[in-house]
Picture 1: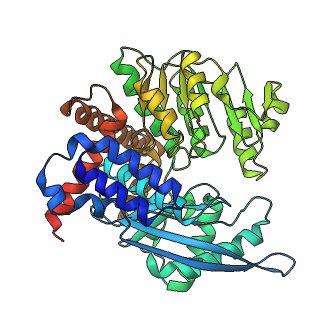
Picture 2: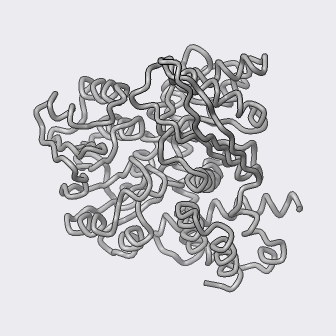
Picture 3: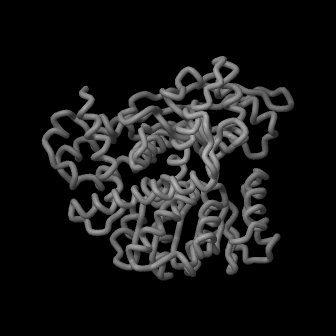
Length: 447
């Protein structure tokens, strides 16, 4: 590692010793982009320090009342990481695991994921340690209103545009947008994305991250002279991203054979590939129970309590759940089972050690979430365009635009890897492509 990169990494470690998710994300990125940090201007203008820390960050208390009249207080966050190439853009996550470190890690990842889309959007993230599971719709509404009354002054169509993430779906976005309109007095549809179709949302938004991942995968397969048809796929999670992968894979002839939750995983040898199964998974997620066992009971398939799906022999593995779900032992299983393609949809789903093991193996081709998982934000940005035009594209039009964006991301990642002598390392390639775009824009705009 060159001296400048090492100094930036050391400085971050001293400043944020208790923020492991953020440090892991940044240090992995610094390692990936090292071949491209080859000009004195980067150190002279201290570009890296300005890229790895957020421009602004806000934290606030979120008091709200439950249905019994008892008051609870949660913590809310918004990190506005980079506005170099456009207004801040990124999700809101409502989950007990949310901390300042998690939000900063998500904002950092989002910045470089957004840059790859080719659209003029910066990076941000936010959320709260509030858990919507087990709460009534009225309780969730009260929380969302209180959260927005703290957040509204920091966001807007040309400032910062939040979207959904774990725990924040169409329902929560609706409550948040309603509160935003009330407190600002503006029907500013571009202030949030992920909205319902009746008030400015984009078609295929819920499936977009999964669709985009499969489109990226299709280009990887094409590079190897293959197609997705007939391939068996292991997927983790059972939310919108996982379901999007199931739907698009089935459309292109592939077959997702696993889904997972905190309780374990299910194995469906026939594939999650029918409308009945899609509808059931959607309802299962909407129930808020966060358990995948119900799928096994409904369709009479295998359920493995307390286990992960990576022990199932498949052609392709696509982690769609959460960060660090793939440990070293899981990576060993994937390789032992002959998995040939590993494509990240979730943010940082593998630990640094597990990812290194997969990347360096000649038996498997890998792709990172900054590239393959960009479909969600791509369609979010397309939603912003539609809001500004006061026009709604058809489902087919949005899907076609998404496929084009994902193809461009693949091309940029592959070209950057080749340019710096990294062969077919798409993970390093996508990090370098995003770094070059943002750093060039940052230098052009001065201090």
